[in-house]
Amino acid sequence: MQEEHIFFYSRDLRLEALFAKGHSEKGVVVTHPHPLYGGDMYNNVVAAIVTAYQDSGYTTLRFNFRGVGGSHGTHDEGRGEQEDVKAALAYLKSKGIQDLHLGGYSFGAWVNALALNQFSDDIATMVMVSPPVAFLDFSFLKYSEKIKLIISGERDDIAPPSIIKQMKDTWNPGAAFYVIEGADHFYWGKEKEIIKMIKEYLQRD
Image (cartoon, rainbow, N blue to C red; front, side, top):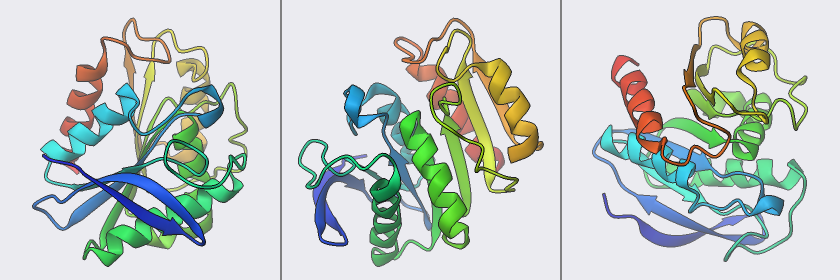
């Protein structure tokens, strides 16, 4: 599916994004890892998440958080980034997408979780790849039936499976949780496994 390079606004900040129109009424906003460690919308895991949703017919929107790439503004430690997610969801709505989903990797999964806490009514489901529970505070995240799928790597020291397994009981005991054998936090060479897991989940959903 061909992605179009576009811009949208988060309040007064212009954000850079890649948008692709799917053939279903569902759409997903996909968020990237930590900007201060080189994270952007072209990240390999972000691309894998986008591919899984596109293959499943979803409209996709991945974007650079404020201060990253061609996006205006500066990094805001998750506060302004929640506004960016809200603006991305609003952009999908403006394109006629009413069934809105979130997918995020690492820092992006954390920001999405913060956003879910703030405006969950707008969000149908959320998929998290390597929520960085050993690096950022997730104590704010309570039970939500919208948390449907969590993926981590067997050797992921930023999102350790053992800690996620414990936290999942609070987040949503019914959420699917998959651990990719041999993968660390960066998933090099494991992208196809991420795509497969998300596509299988979407087929069941």
